[in-house]
Image (cartoon, rainbow, N blue to C red; front, side, top):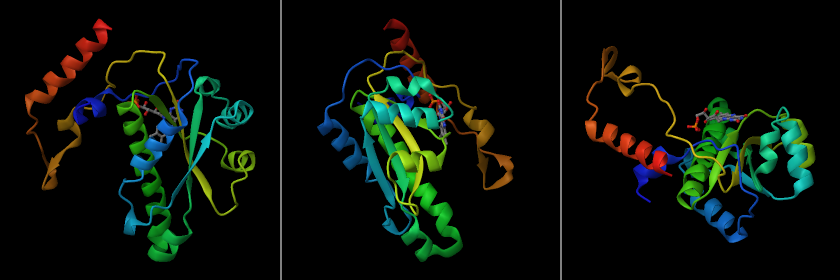
Length: 197
Ligand SMILES: Cc1cc2nc3c(=O)[nH]c(=O)nc-3n(C[C@H](O)[C@H](O)[C@H](O)COP(=O)(O)O)c2cc1C
């Protein structure tokens, strides 16, 4: 798939088909997502693949009872192994270690979408409960949970702020306004394709 279509097409999906994901596909996603940038290339992410139904139920309960999650056949629990990053960067280490994990997680959502899978980033959870459920050591933080599966819903591209609203040129006083119209057309095309489905 063209990169722009992957980027615009990915959505947070909360309804999944009752269909397993081949383990090799999960391996491909984790391997490719690992090419995300990280501070000092420290790659302080770890990824727990959770397929076990009872564990997924316990994790969904720990995610402020987000029961929709259980439909997803796989959870990827991204953990922050932050010690090296803190040793390298001192005060900034905590922030960098989280940013690195976020890059890895976003990579997972994009690679998964390119491989025909849907995902949702879940950030609302009880860290200690997830640590207990998955026997994660005390000094490793579960940071992000990604649900993965085959989508059972169709969604239009997400609503976003106008790019001119969020962009500035050289300083905060001047707006950046050069947004080519071909992107608007691409967004319209994708919407049309989704309507036809
Ligand atoms: C840091 C973060 C935390 C999030 N936590 C949750 C969550 O706990 N539950 C959920 O259903 N979605 C969660 N989301 C997904 C957002 O709701 C979603 O990305 C946003 O509404 C934009 O929609 P889109 O991903 O379909 O473009 C989270 C996203 C991020 C980046």
